[in-house]
Length: 163
Image 1: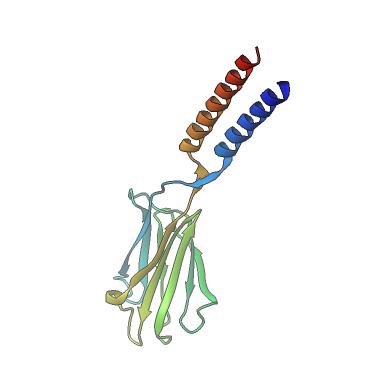
Image 2 (image 1 turned 135 degrees about the vertical axis):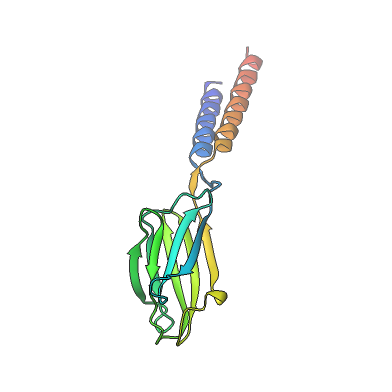
């Protein structure tokens, strides 16, 4: 009888702990990158990355890959306090340049088509946007409490039968 109660309590503890610490994907706010040709020089692309609520993605790591060497990072930098980054591609290297902006699970990837003359903003594309956050879900805690309550109820029923 004592072994059954101890087993039930251990099961209750393990279930509660397991449900509380299992990471689940949390809802996140998206990031988006706006871009425009820099009016001062006409050759560079100004990017501004923000969260969906308009707050800037500060200090995000920015890597740029050229079409000539897609697996080699050509430019590495960070967005400023306003989420801005300026990029000037080498127009001698035609093709699709890739800009990857990333910070703490937030990511935006842009494809920048460049020809011998200029950046072709009409063909630019957003090729990836991810927001991955893992956290303990409040529903996991609720589920853990429900399992714990059920185990306590079973323990009480078992102890009443033995009296």
